[in-house]
Length: 239
Length: 335
Image 1 (spheres, rainbow over the protein chains, first blue to last red):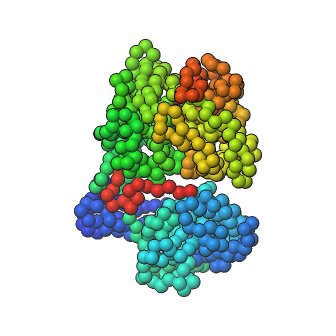
Image 2: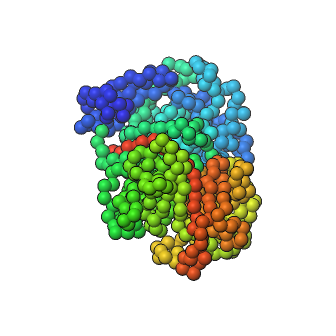
Image 3: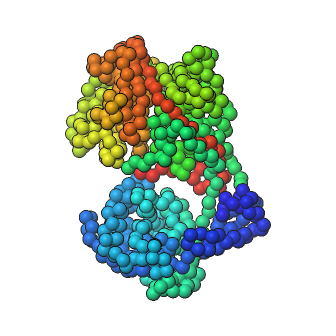
């Protein structure tokens, strides 16, 4: 949204520009706040978010782990960082990847078929794991770090993760509707979430509607090339 | 879009290791010597290095070079190497990839019957020969700086391994070299993460317990990297290695300056003769071929003149910009 407006693919027609985006998860309604041909923030209405399972207890090498499972566009296991034996700091990223993968595997084995999207059975299993902590920045409400894919760590506060986290807190009675929820990432970047009201049920689960707001920045314009003799034409992965 | 900086780069790789070449956006890097230019960049424009090497534009595995005016009459341009941790004095994979990219993009014209280019660098001029076919660079052969073994079998104490013996050699950067088997590991993909973690412990221990000082360059007095060696898997290779790159990565290429340092070490031991091919394999099984073509002296040290051959490839044309409101104007690194 920031890129298409700042590069004039869609015009910045006023201080507030609304766009509707087709995505694999459905229509996404987004609103950009604009100033001097620049997008200062984008608020998007995410898919209704759902609290799936509470207090799932699993045994892992490092001890007993209690986590909640919520959906905010992806399935998240949410647990306090100290349970995973990590702190949310730049230098602990590798530790979280290592222990997080083990916890996620143990959890998926335990929850089995109970974590399946009721309307899209292709979406199943805990794909993302979020560890949570109290914030470092006093202007924020919670801090988090998210493990996804084989060993990826979200550098941002995680949009779908913030959605899942708000649903979890809401159904636990810890977050009311229409209140700002400022979520901090490992590197100190911020997204602001807001629960906007009850949403239609997702299968048997109560759902909540929400928005997530953040800022984005253009950092380059790239032309990727492939030399016909390059031996790494499909790239490679290490580690 | 509102920009507070535009840097034009050619991205390239040699042996799988990236090399980001800054060809535009820094029109003048003052300094009479390459050391002056490096000092200027590190003191006045370190933002450029941090922006291009750190996330989100770079990564712990990024490496690059800033192209400057030459400082000697024979050179085509000057090169200042950049990495996430700072300014390494030399870079072999970068020389191969930079020569390929600047010639293929037509920025530099190879000269003479041997299609030569000369780069001014902090530790002196580097001469390269290009094998060309229809404007395409098929092979780069680099004559690198005189290389020598400085500390032969030095002992360091590092937990959890206790006493370890390392060779410290110069090949354009300083390397502490030890067999991966000394810490119970092998040089292969499965050991990648364990080798990086070992490198994190070893590099500060080496610099805390051993002293190096290049006889000709007073500012070069640190060990830059740790090189783990092991037996090759490719039939055309004589050895395999992985070089730990601080803070949290490793060279994907066979490491050019590391290959020069290793060849100097093998020569000093009588294990590598002059004018013999030395095939060096990387962690991802890419290959550079080194060769010692002469001897010389550097201060009190018996030194060898190494050459290094490999191929480089252009991977992209990049315009990096910085939004003045970007909260990470110098990027960040994890790990």
